[in-house]
Every structure is written in C-alpha cells, then in structure tokens.
Image (cartoon, rainbow, N blue to C red; front, side, top):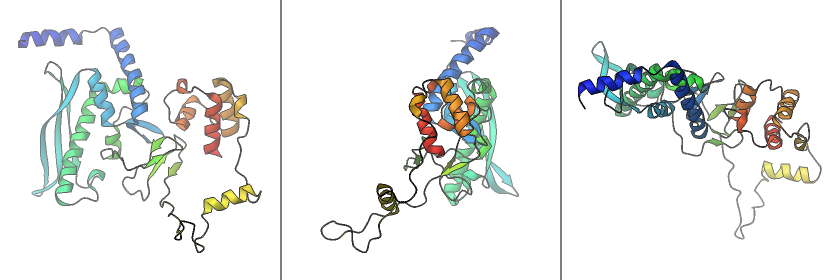
Length: 300
C-alpha cells in the first residue's frame, strides 16, 4: 500500500458523520462497561471511578490502535537523574500514528517509593511509560470513557503510580472487590462505593488452635472468639445477630428494592445503589430479594 493509499484511507475514516461517530462510541462504551465491570480494572477515588491503563488499552483495541514507546529519556537536575520522561505513540492497524503523549515519572512519586537502586530505576521507567500510554489514549478516546460512566482522567494520573495486580488473596468477599495497599496506607483496604467509608482487611489471620496427640484442642488453648460467639447464640446469651429491617421475600421488583433501600439504608439514587453493590447498572440486578438481603447484611 502506497503513501497515497494510506492518506485516502485515513481521510475516509476522518469523514465519518457525527451520528456514526456517536453510534460507534455508544457501542464501544457499552462493551467497555461490561468488560471493566468483570475485570475490575478501575479505581474508585473520592467516590468517582477512574479507568486503569488496561481499560484504556481495551478502548484502543476496539479502534485497532496500539501503543508503542518511542523513547525513554532521563530527567536531569544538576547532572543527576531524578526521573524519566516516556514518549508513547498510538499507531493504528495501517501503521499510521494517530496520537501520543509524553509524561514524566520522578523517583519521588508513589510508583518508586520503598525501592532502591535498579529496582527504583526500573519502576520509574515502567511507570513513566504507563502514565504516557494512559494519557495518549485519554487524549484520543476520553469521550468513550465518559459515555461509559467513568472519569476521563486515567487512574494512574490520579494516583501517581501503576495499578498493583494483587494475586495474593487480598479479596473482600463482602463487597466483591480487591483490597489494595498504596502510598502511606498501613493495611489493605478499599473504599465502599461513594459513601466515603472504607472496608479494611483484618490485619491478622486467626492462628490454628493447639492440639494434643489425639488431635483434640489443648486444655490450655483459649476458646476462639468466633466459637464463643456461636456458643452464646446457641444458648441464648449475648446479642443475637441482627436481622434485615424487613422480610427480603416481600421485595419483588426494582421499584420496591429502591424504596426499601431508601427507607431502610438512606440510599437515595440508582448511582448510590450501584456503588453499594459494586455494579455499573441496576439492570445487572436479577434477584431483588437477594440483593436487599445482601445490602442488609453489610449495613447491619
């Protein structure tokens, strides 16, 4: 294909009428919402959702565009390297450059904290490339992110660090999302929707009870707190577990669920309800009774 052919193709793509642009972006945004909801490649910051670089790469894949690093350049101050600039370009399937960005990362940023020597140098170069890649995609495709209900600014640009993909089991079964630990955080935690509250992972896991030769609990072993609570409940002592404020089986549809959540838990909008359930749309709710019971269990 000649340079003239490439120019013709590029011009044809740029002449897409506004309605086609909107239709194409709407289709992409719906697909993006589904993928991001399943993969959790976004971060909630101050109650708002920001896409991580993997989500931006997904948008790029929709448009047959991928990122390449043109250069990584040291940032010098008084002759000493204090960080790196990364120059990332976006290239389409025809080999044409369709976008790009240059972004820095300094050794003082979150991505490099706690690291020394070669590890710090490597982390800084990697983060600079991630920042530049996210920025390049954001400059081309922020309108798709907005249509999907996300903020146009990349998560990496907000936090100053690459997302950490934790496969060590730091997962919250209550809210169905991963705990994370960044910056000055002392424990693994995650924000609870847009409530301003945080759910923190227990800092210590219970130790297994000591046993004798027969495998029975040692006489000196103190009864675990959970077992004590169970004993108290079985004997009628102590405070019984709290029950939902109403019978979940009476909630048959979305309207009844919305009303119950407002009256019982102060959830005022569909957006708050989705944030509570960590979903993107109330259309994802299939069982209203089960959903109410789940919220009641968390709020109680």
